[in-house]
Image (cartoon, rainbow, N blue to C red):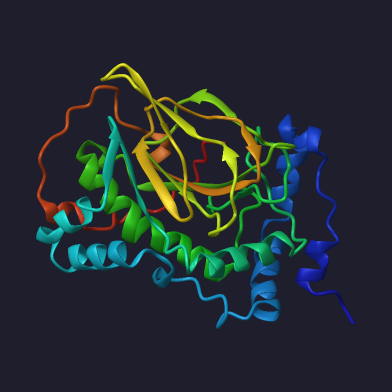
Length: 304
């Protein structure tokens, strides 16, 4: 009996950690040469090893208030104020809000635990230690998480929630939000403990915590450098909470000192990575323009 696509994918030998971090050509060849195999392996894995009735990925996992407000705005954009009322501005161009229902997060985390134990090669974000929970999420990325139900959910989060909310908060990014990017990141004192101050190559960044209630950690706060008010604002994640901010806001992750923290990080930017120029003016636009999905083909550009 010939080996299945899933068996063949599991038999692949990943490039070394050093080769990945140094972005050697052999690594690029590995992902390119095995792209179709890995895509089919994820499909086969989900069909044969995942009970999709137990691990149903849809917007029922999201905070009820957020889901209802967003659905109302899609039906009638004049009701978008219901969405904005859920978002707390905690620093200039930085907002915090409840994204996932903490009591429903176990479904998504259970699914992702199966992903991380699937033994199908995934490419971790470059520059991040090769821990078991770092993965690329977007189709534009080599070695991404190609499981069909996850991809449907991922794109629902981006298109139904992230983009219109981003346009509501930062209307100047319209036209610079046609393309998407995403990765997962895992903070642990013994692997990735912190990230130095930086800005993102995005128009807008959505950072969502996936810790379950009771999964405590200490440290790992996010410092946002509020250049308008000339101060540093320090924020902490709670299960299912999110921070959304313009990509050009400098920020850093403080060292995690105990426990661990798992997050999804999603970006929007324009075609070929274009982002608004610094100091772009915020202009009024019709609400209907915010609550639309751009008819744009993914261009294949990946920031890393």
